[in-house]
Image 1: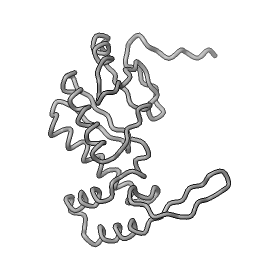
Image 2: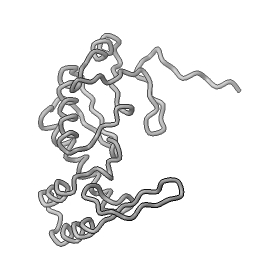
Image 3: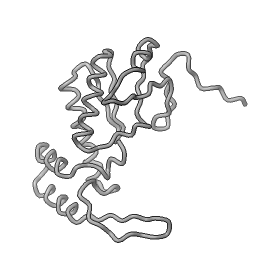
Image 4: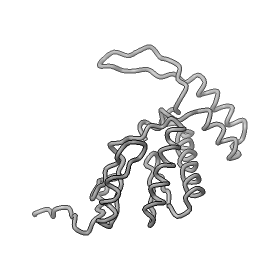
Length: 177
């Protein structure tokens, strides 16, 4: 997700908190803070005047972490209910899907895209990819169309500081000492 903290739809966040049973006084206090939340831009050495915002939550605020967890939980719940053979996983705004079923994975991927579109959370295409440990599945995935777009199929990726290889044939070169 691109700039997730700045994109979260506040009205949906607060509605989810009501459903989760967050105390009303906490929701009112946070809503009051957000109602007067301003941002500004720094361009070179110039700063714009502050302007009122209507989306997102302030990064660094402890409630922002809870907001991220709320949307990640919504994502995991939605996928697990609609696609029980798919395992959703979320780490902050890195959302993943795994499944043994190629068809179920594709359906869940479409659901993920639809959820992000409904929440106005833009997906980072350059940080999105498909993978499989089976060459034949990778070949079929390479022609998948997700909302009129292609998602690349990768053999390796550096994710959250860790090198990941999805193929037995792909290895990182050994360092010479």
